[in-house]
Image (cartoon, rainbow, N blue to C red):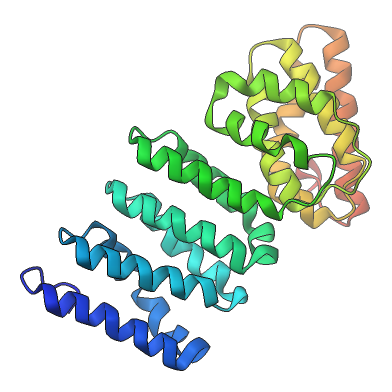
Length: 276
């Protein structure tokens, strides 16, 4: 019924029927609704406004009450919606992600390393509506970050993820932060993309700042599983600083940061890339 382009009542009726089914059955309806999410998300781009409004209302209600443990299953559908050429599907998917962050904060915190790059891509979209929705969505997702040292910097880090020119400003803010609380997976998810970009910068002072920040926060990583998703981004770049930068002082910063990262990995029972 959703694919009947010339039959508006059929499309709207199908959406309303699913909405009522969800209202009546609650979590029991989820196994039937989730496989159809891709088709539902396509309706954000429906030419008839009434149908597009009905799908938004239905999906927001669904995401507001969905089982939090379904978050990992739902994300691929949202990522696919963000990757389409349709700006309305992108905006709709980003809105749903923001709702999911409220419904399943613990799960979104764990999944934030996957979420940040996908939403950041949307922040570079040419359509202003997509950029705005992406920023709002990532801001909502980042409310799951509870590290008191980093919380005040989250808006700066979100902005730096969206605008590479603000990387230096974000690094300066991180340099001025005294890390005293445990650094966990959600915290790293918003910091590491900025650090990775700074490490790849040609400016050696940016590399130095990144090395200092990595050295500081890695001392407070208590679980190797928290740092594991970021090792591939950090370790090779720190090794490159240690071995390739022509200034001895900067190479020393790279070596120190790499050693602290390796210790964090090993202390948590993880494996260092070179030693696998």
